[in-house]
Image 1 (cartoon, rainbow, N blue to C red):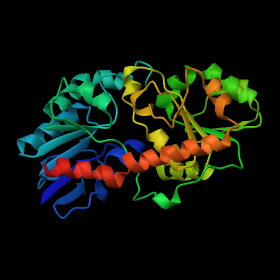
Image 2: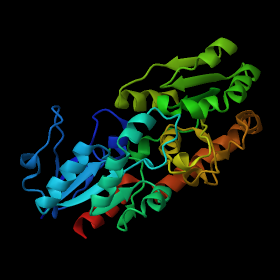
Image 3: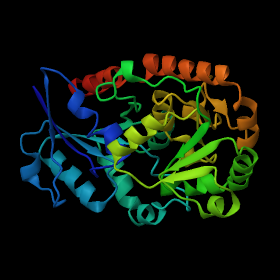
Image 4: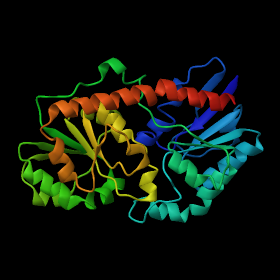
Length: 327
């Protein structure tokens, strides 16, 4: 029996949902015991780790984290660090940039100390490989335990809704093509444009009434709202840089399950899929090409779902986690 203790760094956030808190409890094995050691006091010592064979820590970046990793190793516990972002290439415009720079040596220390690293994408693995030679890609996946396959939304032929979802960390990506987005909204008054998670003053000032906002929601509320919206098109602009090239395609997974066709930047590794509509440096041009071709949009959504069924179901991806735990 392998006793696996894990620590996700936040409670109601997408990263632990896709990397620790939302996936590790679904590893079903008579050979593995899973325990979450998160506590609200955020202080951890040997007493939190006693009895563990393996310690999985999500996104360690602080001196406290590197000290905890050292403690675990001193206790003979195997340490696995899990990363969903490329912390070595956070751009200056990202809200996490300053705190990451303050803790850069600790980030490197954690990666170097780890017995093993799990990353969500091959791009991140490539970046981290100079610090650790035992890295394994375990991609983010559709959680078919919580969101059943037979509940997947069909494409909606009755509405004209385009949706964007993203938090403050993606403001730069949006503002880098803001004029393009504003022009698209103003040109397509018969469509509703929904923004979930962030508000953009430039859009409010420069467009009319065919856009709406959803204030930030708790994670499960967001999933429910996004699913029920059942938008025809989901769009997700990402600037081309090293950090974004490490981004996983969870926005694509979520949109597909909600019945939407997806517009994204196919220049980035995880978004270079045949069923994704390439943003092609112009959201407006991409949108114009497909906005009234509902038969094609429906077909693209179905192709995306087929790809997810073959490549990105948590019930399959967790087999990779199980293999690594038992290795």
